[in-house]
Amino acid sequence: MRRQATGDVLSGMIGAFIAQGFGILTGTLAAVWLHGRAAEVYGADVGLVASEVPELAVRELARLRMASRAARVSRLAALSHDPARPQFHAS
Image 1: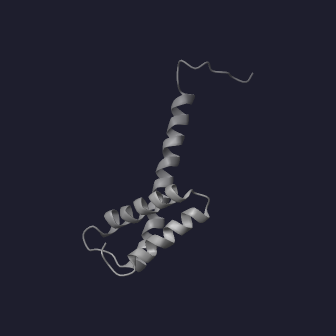
Image 2: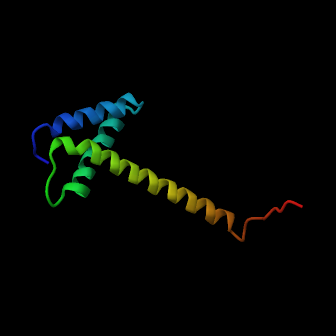
Image 3: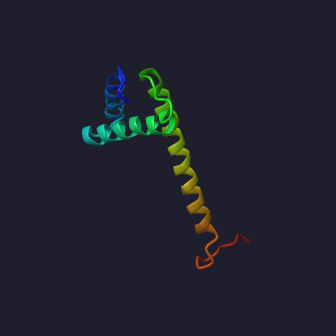
């Protein structure tokens, strides 16, 4: 993504993460990763313009959150069906 204004978008993303309470380093790393990930996933074949990056980054972040939730639900389901765990039944 060597296009005009993509650095502005990245700066805004860094600021947004920091404003949400992330530390400077963590916010910067998260924004850089998400900025690059959006470009990799959605613009690898055709490229992107700067105005497309924020929406695509939000889409990728939502996808990651859904995957994280699904993994947590799966772990909880596995724990509830673990035969080694004692099962308590209401009488």
